[in-house]
Image 1 (cartoon, rainbow, N blue to C red):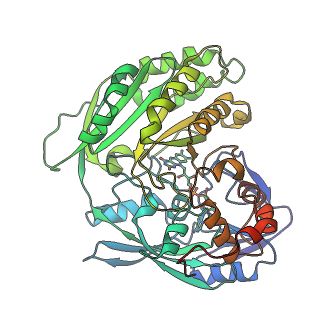
Image 2: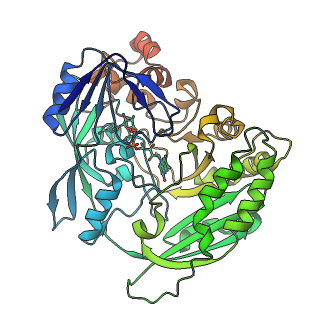
Image 3: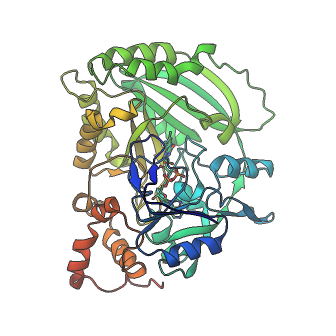
Length: 457
Ligand SMILES: Cc1cc2nc3c(=O)[nH]c(=O)nc-3n(C[C@H](O)[C@H](O)[C@H](O)COP(=O)(O)OP(=O)(O)OC[C@H]3O[C@@H](n4cnc5c(N)ncnc54)[C@H](O)[C@@H]3O)c2cc1C
């Protein structure tokens, strides 16, 4: 383990919007090193992966653990299609190793540079008719608790429902076992659709296709619909990838949007240009979910927000969202596309999909350094909160305990469990303390002091 101890060290997130000083830094390669770092941390400690979260959840403590070199594949159970890995493995290495065996995780996010631990902790997800959060494929893990002891958690235990999405607040996930599924080939078709048309048909599209993703483009009255269905890999598909210049979309967008911080109204023109240039042609191709749908490189950084809403409440929410985003008197000049995806309900306490199938909607600025002045983040948040939407833990939002406790039925149970496992708040930074209103929770503990029923820790 490499350990640095300096007072001048600064931790910086991927897009440089979050910075913190720290005293001690451990770059770990073994579980023993994680245990030692946690056990011996004199004050607070957090673990980080690829630093690609926009929310201030990965540092801000006296001691830091970098998990990125803790990245080996430990065990493969060929018969059960299960793989046990160290939590710092990137999705790129993980999914390629699965594909080499003819396996995959059937719901993947649009990024492969993140670590498995980071992705699970924040509830990272993909899209699809049967799409689930990545954390739903975890069947076992080892959790390093605040006192340095290790708790093995298995599928079927209620503790697993608390740990799957837990922002590193219950402990550090070390070894993780994933249940894989056979890899499959998708036949994908993309095309622009008027808002009225995809809105009238999205539920049917979701039902009839294995993969559904809608890139929505405010100020253009269009979405760009991507549908995919499983095929035999040998099925011939005449590929139409569109003009070669399409690969420059992100670069061109960044250049156009560079003016929109000073001239927000220019966004409406930029959006129309980007839609015409990059989202007006039809495409057709085939590939595995990973090869064909996950972005492998980006030309720069972003700042992201993402909100989710129950599928049943999506029409009402979207009506308000479209009215606000398309209104040229509204300061919410949003960069396109807004990514609309679909996730199946689950039981994880802090999952966006807890108890209900949901729709996720992304909100991006390509001018990350000016994200504080990007009005769309605030306005999108107001609309989602009004409709009972839940924010993505790894992305930007302002809501705190007061709003969030109404949205998550197991919120107080999670807080109680966190207190039980980490009474000294070793895994807390100031953002998480405020997010979960931890101090108040401690003072008010007399009203709720017992462990959630049936939960053995
Ligand atoms: C360009 C881009 C595209 C994205 N696309 C998607 C997408 O398609 N779908 C989606 O849902 N999200 C998406 N995200 C969000 C991203 O998946 C999450 O922010 C993820 O947490 C980043 O992983 P990381 O390795 O960078 O984690 P970090 O940002 O380093 O850490 C995130 C959190 O995980 C905790 N953590 C890390 N490792 C462990 C561990 N071993 N045990 C316990 N806690 C741990 C950290 O303490 C922190 O709280 C995207 C982000 C970007 C920048």
